[in-house]
Amino acid sequence: MDDLCQELVRLASRGNSVTDWPEDSLRLCADSGVFRWFLPEGKGGFGWSDRDQTLGYLRLAESDLVTTFVITQYMGAIRRIAASEHSSVADNWLERLVEGKVYATVGISHLTTSRRHLAEPVLRAKETTDGFILSGMSPWVTGGAHAELLVIGATLDCGRQILVAVPSELEGVSRGVGVDLVALSASCTDRVEFREVHVRRSMLLGGPCENVLQSGVGARTGGLQTSTLAVGLSMAALGFLEREAANREDLSEPTQQLRAEVNELKKTLLLACDDSQVCEPSEIRARANRLVLRSTQAALMAAKGAGYVEGHPVGRWCRQALFFLVWSCPQPVSHAHLCELAFGSTEVS
Ligand SMILES: Cc1cc2nc3c(=O)[nH]c(=O)nc-3n(C[C@H](O)[C@H](O)[C@H](O)COP(=O)(O)OP(=O)(O)OC[C@H]3O[C@@H](n4cnc5c(N)ncnc54)[C@H](O)[C@@H]3O)c2cc1C
Image (tube, rainbow, N blue to C red; front, side, top):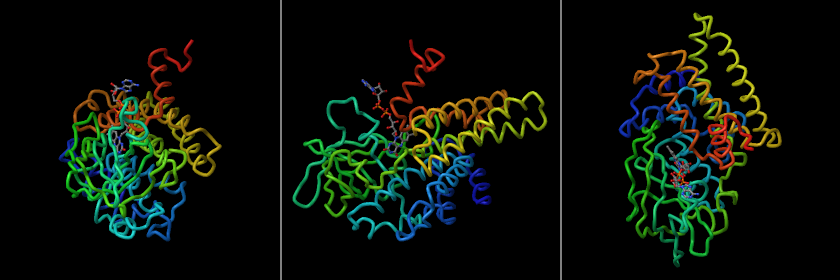
């Protein structure tokens, strides 16, 4: 793990552009068996516990957030394929996916956090005798242009939802190469459009039903993954602060304070993996969001102007920290942030 992380840190200085897809880093992770952490032994995985997966993700995110984020979307697809009650997609794809020979990703946020205020679903499915026809678009798909398989959520006219695995070469599928983002552009996130795409019933992973993502199709309770990555990025910023503080007395006290907070949140996160009653996931997320913003900006204060120069890791971490304000951020957490920004506290009179 130490060697893998060192190499990921080195490769993380790649550019922040859609042409910088982290292929080398993903290959290293595949060769180190990272993609097997997340699956049970019977499905080709190592059967790691939630706690061990979290510890693994913390180390990866501390080393390279872009690659780690891409892996979360990849694993989101793999877990849903592995957990589906229909085995045909798993039979044909799973082993190649965990070996890292083919890449899969998810386009599901339009069923949960994206475009929910619109009157009509952005991606519709029509049932046919032998499968489904998809029409519309999935607004956010990480690495869509690099994926051989897309795990996509869509809504039928009756309001029920399906989850299907769509081979990206199917006629009518059109994938954007990636949009320029504030950070994480190398994740090549973009919309995928579906023009009357015929998907066979054998590619169905879940549904039709209400709330297909809560129906056990690889769903993970707790939603602690985003918080884990935020804590991992905070650990990177803190590592920088500690190296600087070794020679700069003025940094010592704030660095110790942030270290105590990182350790405390890491402990809560790991306890919550074993027992979901320990702390509400949304509370952990709110703490992780605050910590990642504060610790990366504290690192920038310590790095001073040098940290503000393009290419310095601290500037990159500050931009990456903003991602946690928008990535699958639950409504109560974003509302609490807004109030903090507007009122200086979460208490609104
Ligand atoms: C870099 C990145 C990678 C991602 N990767 C993936 C992925 O691989 N797979 C995946 O499934 N998801 C992914 N997501 C999606 C993510 O999880 C969230 O769903 C997404 O960030 C929500 O943002 P949105 O702009 O779509 O939200 P929306 O709620 O659709 O907001 C868009 C706009 O609509 C307007 N608006 C919002 N709410 C209202 C309202 N109530 N009334 C009127 N107007 C409103 C605002 O002007 C807002 O700017 C990714 C997101 C990012 C940023």
